Every structure is written in structure tokens, then in C-alpha cells.
Length: 195
Image (cartoon, rainbow, N blue to C red; front, top):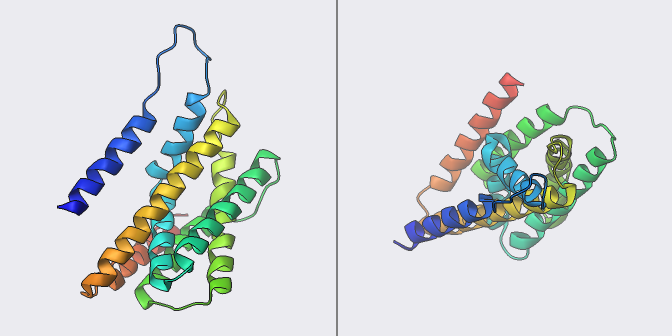
């Protein structure tokens, strides 16, 4: 029952943040930037799967990794977005994002226990690519600051969801966590084939 209530609360929060106030004149306010930033990771299955997977893997690692790994992802994602905003291109962004889904799924499925430094470096590499994609896809006539706050907010929510899922499934000890990881890896393989 609490899981259902939590999902409903999360959905209501996302919908509330996605709504925009009405203005009598167009081009007023920066809500379009924030809203676009929130929606981008939520509507892209590659971004959504990777960001939830980061939270799940961080949960599996346990201890301080539960917050250090997602925080490292957000920091590296901001670096990638900054590169894109500055017009600095990166090679293989889309295949790298697809690979992130595949690799993170395998890490969850195998319950790989990496050191915090290795985990941070792994997610950091992928996060730069995700951030670069977000930065490259900044919609015209939107606030870059609002857009950045939006995709960071959505990323944090997805990471927290992943940590929660990881904790819940870890306690159940049913093997669902490994099955879920294998499913994410399968989705990543499919994305890699489509890239």
C-alpha cells in the first residue's frame, strides 16, 4: 500500500512541476526551460533506465555509495551539459548512452560489488555523455539555467526512485533485482542495436 501511495505522490509531483502558469504575453518567465528540462529525462527511455539503474546499483553497493554514486552522476552530468552549452562536441554520445543502460543493467544483474572510486568513475563517464545529450538538446528560446535545474531535478528523482526500488527488492530477496538488471541490460542491448 505504501509503495502505491509513494508512486502516486511521485506522479503528482512530476505533473505539478510539468504544469506551467499562464501568461498574457508570450516569452515571459523561465518555466518553459525548467519544464523542458524535467520532461527530457522522463520521456527518454535511455535516460530514464540509466538514471534509475544508477540508483539501484548504488543501493546494491550500500553504505555511503547510496548517495555518493548518484551525486557523482549529477556532478559529471553537469560537466557534460556545460561542454555542450560551450559548443564542445563529444564523440559517440548516443552509443555511449545506450551502452550505459546495458552496462548498468549488467552491474545490477551480477550484483557486482565495486569500490566507491570505481563506481563513481563508471557512472561519471556515462553521466558526462548523458549531460552532453541534455545540453545539446536545449530547446530554442528556453532558459538554459531553468532547463538545467529541470533535468537535474528529474535526475535526482529518478536516482532516488532507483535507490528505493533497490532497497525494496533487496529486502524481498526474491531475485527480482537481478531479473530487473537483466531486463535493463536487454533494453540496453536493444538500444545499442538501434543506434
